[in-house]
Length: 305
Image (cartoon, rainbow, N blue to C red; front, side):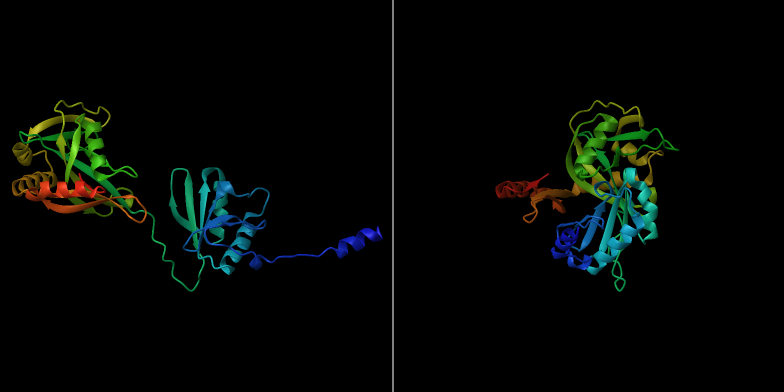
């Protein structure tokens, strides 16, 4: 027995304090007594509830120890992405000073800013919704128009809807027009936009009017959303009592731009840094369109839509 005790004492005793466990940028933070997370370039750490062990432990005690360690090692912001299955963690996070930043269908994201001497510079979550309306006019100056099922007043309006995540404006307008009317189209230009605050979900709202050229004439109404769809002479549309003033002005502006040969074109470019597609919108003039197309084709990495 005495020999066993001597052997244990002879072994070197190595104890590491939490401050000695360094956190490297872009690396995982791993400590048995702490929550693990990933550090970003802004010195923020992100913890995903489904990827950490929180069973059979005092969550708040572990949180407080983690916060002390992160603060001591220069972490500035702590993000907790809490999945629905671990939503029991949320009250503990709130007790430790976290607040909601945003939420998705299956995840609540909570944030705690650590530097007490600095104001938190983190911007709020996305606050603007993006919608599109397609102005589709055929060669006889008939405009494609719809009546929605769920309107209180049966106005004739432009087909359209919200842009989906990762979707370009032109593609969104083409999709919405086809879904609601059965008309296939191709992108021509952006005619204009409306910006309003305090809209759906108390968010700001940007509504882009996208000019599209029709590729077929026979309409197929979306029975779920659309009460009626038809081609209407644009002159009649501009005087129709069941057309909102905004859409009358849109039609008038379309005719004006058509007469003057002015449009808001879209140029696609490849970002040389992250190699992602960039869409740039500029005022263009009809007489320069052909030369512009030629120069874009020669460049190889650009095209005018």
